[in-house]
Length: 319
Image 1 (cartoon, rainbow, N blue to C red):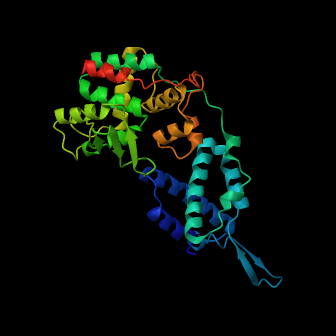
Image 2: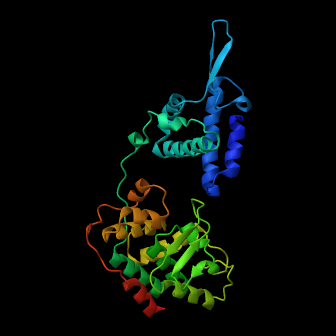
Image 3: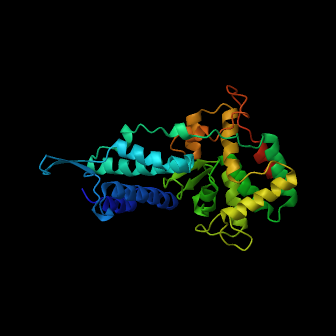
């Protein structure tokens, strides 16, 4: 087996993760390897994950090496717990990803499976976040209609976010060629999880988006949504734009990510299965999806609501 640093380099080159996620994971893994170097009293360049400790006879002769184990990682988490749940969670996810990679490529025994450490023990109970009601959404769209300086763009942008639950970064990277107006789908090539995904739109929404790109004289390779100076939007600009409309409408202020939580909560409210919501949001874990649903809003657990075209019909009348 290569040194731990060499394995990290191989991991960085081969694992399928978004660049931002990989960068974060790599930092946490490197910190852990530095910790190993300290407890082994060995140079970081000479740390091997399959030779973390050794057994010697009474004469000091080497009998065998032992690989890293769960107890070492438990101790590391114990030293890290004062930094709070989010840091612990990121450390856990980074190390799990790294050791799963080694497990897959070397049949390396994954020490994460033997941890006594329980991440849930450090979870601080969160206050329930705010989501928009269906009435709030119509109020927001009406405000966009009355106050937008670029109505067709803003209406399509926020309707896409609200009705798909998509991440803002994924929508801003969407190109005109990714719109299928025949089947009402969007093809997401650049996602947070680095896995391509097909996004389903409401009926006729694909045609509405395609019409918008034609009106803007966009080429197939252009981004669908651009700022007033035809430059790519930043997340900050979209959050500022949403905040302006929410303030005018006298609605609860939330970041754009709040629209994603709104989508998840409204889907749950009309009785959609949690695993379907997970797939629509592009989550890997049901636990993550459950955190996106505001339990104080969900009322109609077993209510089978028909598809609601009210919002789309409303926009078609306005634009």
